[in-house]
Image (cartoon, rainbow, N blue to C red; front, side):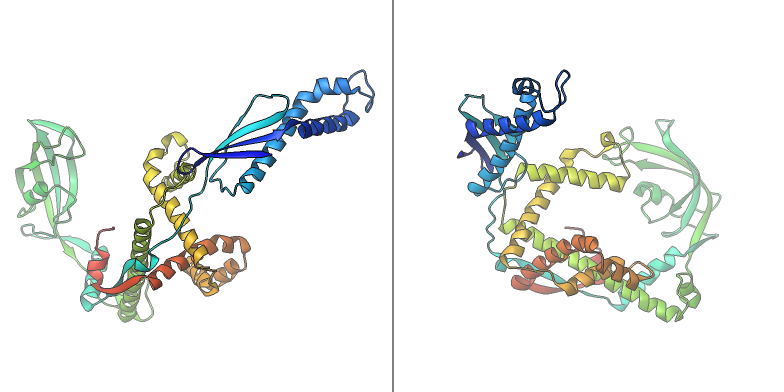
Length: 431
């Protein structure tokens, strides 16, 4: 077998394989003899069909089968011989039969060679989130607002009130689509309406009738309204003030906390806030590691893997959206950037695992399973069931080993703690 390899791109290779035809013809002859022993052809007894007739009837089919098998086997042998690692299936082109050799050309992409550098120079800021009394107070206020009721008040409206109105919006005297509403509640300051609209409802009382102008933003979603001024006629039915529940055991019970009352409920709230902050901190650190890893180790990836990942991400999006019809799926091109990042990170982390000889940590495996089962009432039973299921553990193991690789980078890089308040950290925009 003669093999030649040509680089046609950074990762693309064109490999030509040439084999002598004689051994292939021998395989064809041998298989035709086997076929002849069992072939059923009208006019001949089984096993007595002349070789010429067998070749006429089955020769082409058998030859194609043999050539296909030879091609697959020789392709595998060739890439092994040349120490190539294809990233996907090859594009095969066979050459015309010259009577002496069988030759084909395989074009494919290879996996990139990954040589990691500067892992120890990666800088990470680890959020150290503090939860103060003010953070607890803010959270309790939010929870009280969830249980708030509204009562009519006999006064002018102020920020935070709910104003129930009828409204009619007009452009140049004509009512525009969507410009009318009956018994419509507007919470002032909540941002549910345009600023000019809410501003016009400040200082009104039940029974008032008023008019004001509202300017729509230039980027307003309705093109026929974007950048224009509309006149609104308003009839105020009533002004309602927000009534917050008292912080007591009854309030705690409304959140299904019966034992321990308000004190236990506040302890549970703090614990939930700590858990939420911890999860966000881990995610934040992970993103820092990923971004730094890509920045310090830029990698060209095979288009084959990128396109596979794009299709995978599109499928995931369809499942989240509940879409089954491919024609209604989000455009495939929209996943190109994310897919490229995913593939590159996967290759880089795999190399970290290999270079640093990282093996699965059983304690982390169990901790990960406990996280997955935390929402179940019988969490302990579910953990034991998962841990004893090899198929489930095969799915969990790659996630754990990947996290171990990330932890290695954190532990061996230049990380430092950064103190930050709960409010500032949780309200920080996603990077």
